[in-house]
Amino acid sequence: MKRVFSHPFILSLLIIVGLIFLNSQGWLKFSQDIFFSLTASVQKISYQFSSKVNQMTGSLISLNRLNQEKVRLAEENEELSSQLVQLKEAARENEFLRQQLSVSSPESPELILAGVIGCNSSFLEKTLLINRGSQDGVKEGAAVITAGNFLVGQVVETNNSSSKVRLILDPNSRVNALVQESGVTGLVKSNQWLNLTIDFIPQGENIKEGQTVVTSGLAGFFPVGLFIGQISQIISIDVEIFQKAKIKPAVDFENLEKVFVFK
Image (tube, rainbow, N blue to C red):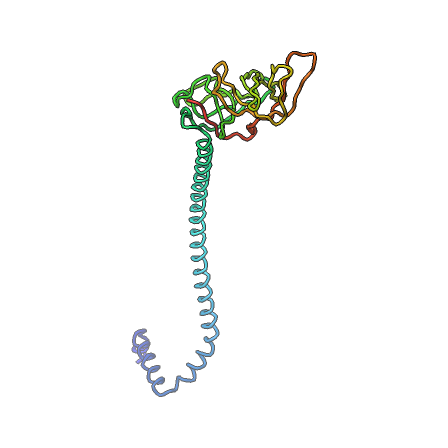
């Protein structure tokens, strides 16, 4: 008998059968109630912990998705911003062209639109660098204007893809001009202090402040009728043969971005 009960399998089987019998008679119910009472709080804590872990995992997944969406939206925003800048620049160029075409006569020569990419504004030189060159049809000596037929200067040097423009503010610039209201001719030049003047006007010629100065076309360096500026001050000394006048330039040279080159 001792050998039978000493065998582990037989012993386990007898315990299981005994427990089944006791449970069928209801004798284990009290023990089960005690067990469930003791483990209920543990199960509740375990369930709550599991629920929190699931919520946290879901939150982390949602946060990761939100971060990915944020990155995607930021990339789309950068792309849209780039497109908006390009559209605005195209609109500005179209407006610039429209302004020029609205004031140019049908007989006007072909013009080359160029962007300003550099400048030199020293006491000895006032020049611009534009992004059009000989491969675009730009030639030395060509007149350069901005929208409204306002005279900017003259091309003095060309490369394949860029050109150097001498401004009318340059001390070496000379422009044959006339006062539109009276037909009086003179020579427009500048100095190192950016004072633009029309000189060699005979004494006695009636010129007034506010009158318009344009290119005369003499010597053939510039087309006729390009707007230079308006007389802002008369400088006349009786003992001198000629009088001169200061000119307020029509062009805002500090903010030039686009120009036209005569082809």
